[in-house]
Length: 459
Image 1 (cartoon, helix red, strand yellow):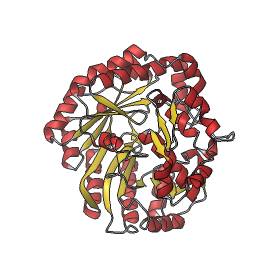
Image 2 (image 1 turned 60 degrees about the vertical axis):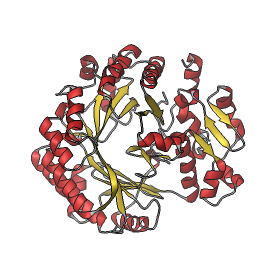
Image 3 (image 1 turned 90 degrees about the vertical axis):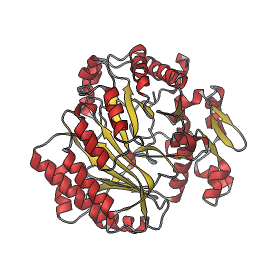
Image 4 (image 1 turned 180 degrees about the vertical axis):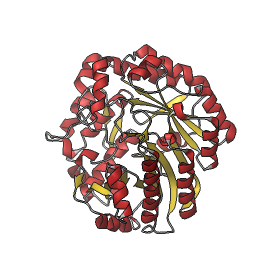
């Protein structure tokens, strides 16, 4: 168990580092022509593989914990216009990409992708599969709300190419779900799992949970995890609820209902962590678990784990991310570009043959280097100076200068047994896994001085 004084010491407002720099550093001013130039330039950059992200913003209900860009389901004509715009945006981007490049990953997120009539998803996939080349055994993934899954819907998703399903269970307690404004699963979770695997033995099933919600306790959350173990999901994700009501006003409803304190939240993480490890799962990064011969585990063991906005991935499946739909963020070698968050503006710009971009960020070489250091820590729990220095043709002294490395900034982390420092680099300890964001901050020059940026608590 993590001592309470340590919890209080490190429960700080910090970046989640799903990107570096974080998305709240993005600035407006990028336009359609600039994005076209960025797309052209990305053909000359690494990785050459392509990851595609499709954002479906529509939800039948907005969950109060949601931090994503989501909207209540509009009238059918708006949905139809949105999908038409999405199809056109894909074609516009494809026209600027080198035809020799291959797609290694396709991911649908939201919102609630499976709230969309399945015919639309089939149409989108048909366009993608007929216009892009794919690597052997690509990952074709979709996030699903179990309240809206039927046997026919799942069958048609499998027929349209999906081979990984992330089932957003979040919690199994009706009281927790009701307070969070989330509908329960329409089908038993074990039926969803067995039905998908019965359609194709190669299909992988992930279960997603979230902890830190009203009415959750360490005991109840751990019971959630125990109850699904017989279904043997391939991966399990336990997301820490990020309370950012200054960004998402609807989260205030959860605050009024009473959020668990940081101590209870950490115990939820610890107890579920112990149960999963005792039942054959291994932890990956901050919040993922996998078992057996999962390629994420193999990548972790070989220090080749990667991370993008879609989550953790391997060197085989990683690629520059080209994102489509409102609010989606393309994650290219030296640029982030985010689409407008307005559905009407998105449709209007696409109809005018313009890319619907709203803001972005261009990284300088130093920021690219810092991103690599932080990714190594967040993904592989270690960082070796020489490996990264060699990758960028730097000396170790030059690399340490870029990240503003100051050994004294690590003293507290070392004293608290969160980090081991060697001549080669740093290794995150077993205890340090719980505080990985705090460790990453020590290598982020942007966080050396006080910032006006607001972040969620690290625990």
